[in-house]
View 1 (cartoon, one colour):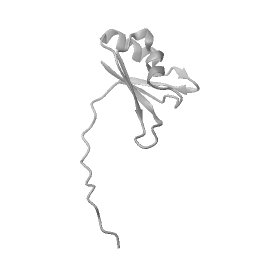
View 2: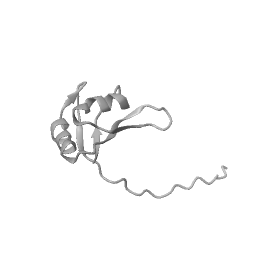
View 3: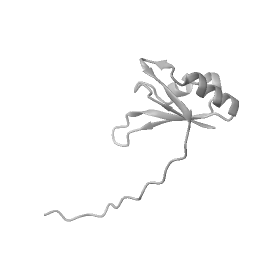
View 4: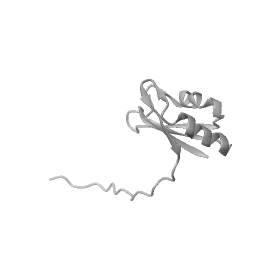
Length: 93
């Protein structure tokens, strides 16, 4: 199961995210970063294969305070389709 972790402190990296949830045996962690600055956007995703452990992680970690911020933890939803952006070169006047 893939879970969403939001409202993360900006000091948390991918390894730190995995460490926060180590009691639930996460297999993979992904921290979402700004494309240009490389800085964390304050949320990420974890993959936990054991569904019971994933549900326990959600119930135990949602609302937990980390560095003064209350975590928002839930089951991840599928990414919505976004319209393609047209990057044609436009003439400037």
